[in-house]
Structures are given as structure tokens and as C-alpha cells.
Amino acid sequence: MKQKKYTKLIILFLCLCLLTSCKKDVGTDEDNAVPANTDDVTEENYTFGFSGMTMELPFYITLEAAIREVIENSGSTMITKDPALDSELQISQINEMIEAGIDVIFLSPVDWEGILPALEALKNADVKIVNVDSHIKDTKYADAYIGSDNKNAGYLCGEDLINKCPDGGKVVILESSNTNSVVERITGFEEALAKAANGFTISVRRDVEGDLNLALQAAKDIFAKEEDIVAVMCGNDQSALGALAAANEADLKDILIYGVDGSPDLKKELDKPGTLIAGTAAQSPLNMGREAANIGLAMMRGEKYEKETYTDVFFIDKKNLELYGTDGWQ
Image 1 (cartoon, one colour):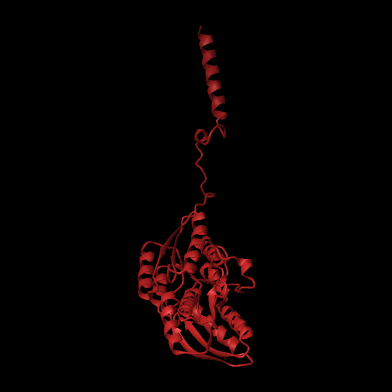
Image 2: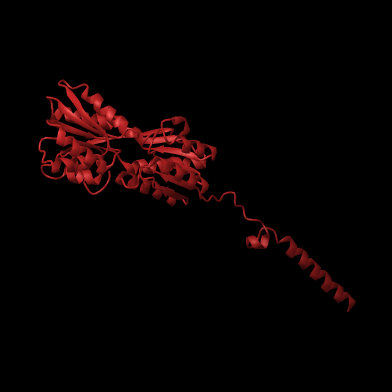
């Protein structure tokens, strides 16, 4: 009896040893008590900010939407503020975004020089700055810039005017002196006119801040006082639409109005029979926004990115309007 009992104990002991030796690397992770390796799992959850000049302009609405799509698809979030063309409000809103913990800001300044206090606050908070569309004056604060070739946009308008008015004439300029992108457009336009065989004269220039209503009022006043105007060069499409409304109200027939943007609203006017809109130097807020978002994400991922990016512009008039359509941005 004792021998059988000892035999059973020995068999039981051997079975336990066998089970213990077979426990390695079998079954589930819980069975093996091996902690999960999370080093290979990356979850992006950065916070971005967007501050354009105004969310009343279709260009900035489209630009913001293009950036937001890429950012949110990456798993991150974006805070958008509308400074409504108010430089002081823009600075205040940027400080609010800093308090909210943004990592990167997409910034188009209302006032390219007056934005300096906000730039200093962003740098002190270690927030990356992607300067979009219109330059900040002190470019050392920007980690990257992306925008259109604005000088060429104005130049294209000037070239078209020379072709349409080879005899020269009086020109009105509706500009925005605090917006660098518009300053560059007007500079390019004037450089083109300087090469004309017959002279053009800038008879009046007004700062309308890129606003349709301000452009409308300025143009109405100019048209009531000035005669023999051959063209109006506008810093953006919204200003051109204001000038168009004033010209139609004054029943003007022989005047050419130029814009810059390639917005759906202006292209629809360009498509109308007998329109006074001569054309627009078009840019693409869709492409610009996507590229800006990718640059911002690259910054946070520690990847390489371009410090300066300039997207192409092209002239749209009645001859090629069908290629681009009137319903949306190109």
C-alpha cells in the first residue's frame, strides 16, 4: 500500500514539473504575463489654431476648411477665431488660443506689422507659426510661410490691361496697405504697366482693406468725380465686386475691372454677358490649405518641411473660364 502511495505522489510531482516547464510563451498575453509593448502605437492629438484676416471672405472660409479637413483626419483638433479685420482683436484672440494650449498656429495677419505683440507671445509659449497667404513683416518669427506668388498675380492683370488698352489711360487702384499680399499684387500690377509702350496714369488710389462695402463706397465716390477711367485694379475679388456694383450703378460701359483670387462669386460675374469684369488672377486656397496643414503636422512629427512655399497663380478671363467653372474654387 505504501509503495503504491509513493508511486502516485511521484507521478503527481512529475506532472506538475511538466506543466510548469510548458508554461513559457503559450496561450494569451494574460497567460504569459508579458506586458504589452506600446512603443509602436502612435496617436496624434495635437491642437492647432487658425487666425485668418476675416471669416467673412470666401477665400479664408475655403482656406480654413481645407486646413481643418487634413488636421482632423490626422486625429488632431483645430481652434478657429475670426478677427473680422480688427488687428487688436486678432492679437487678443491669439492670446486666448495660447491659453487653450495650441501647438501650432496658421496665421494670416490683419496688420502685417501690428501683429508683432502676438508673434512674441507665440514664441514665448513655444507655439510654431505657419504664416499663410499674407506675410508678417518680421519674417524671423515664422517657422514656415506658404502663399501665392502675389506679385505675379498683379503682373498678370497688368499685362492683360496693356493688351486690352494699348493706348494707355487713367487707372484707379483699390488696395489694402496693411496687407502684404495685396501690396505685392499692386506692386506687380504697376511694374507691368511701367513696361507699356503708351503710358498709364494712376489717377486715384484708395485703401479699402479688401472689403466689398468699403470698395463700393470708395468706387462710387471716385466715379462721381473722375472721368475717362479705363480700368480699376483691385487687391482682391471682393474689392472688385464692390467696384463692379458702383460701376453698374453709375451706368459705366467702357471700364475694365480686375480682381485677384479666382473666387466663385467673381467668376459668376465674369460669365455674364456684357460684364465689366475683365478677369482675375486666380489662386487656390484648397491647395494652399492642404499644404499648410501638412507642413504644420510635419513640424509636430519632427519631419522635414519646406520653409517657404509659393503656389502658382494664373489668369482667368472669358476665354478660359470654362476650364475652371464658376461653382467652386480651383
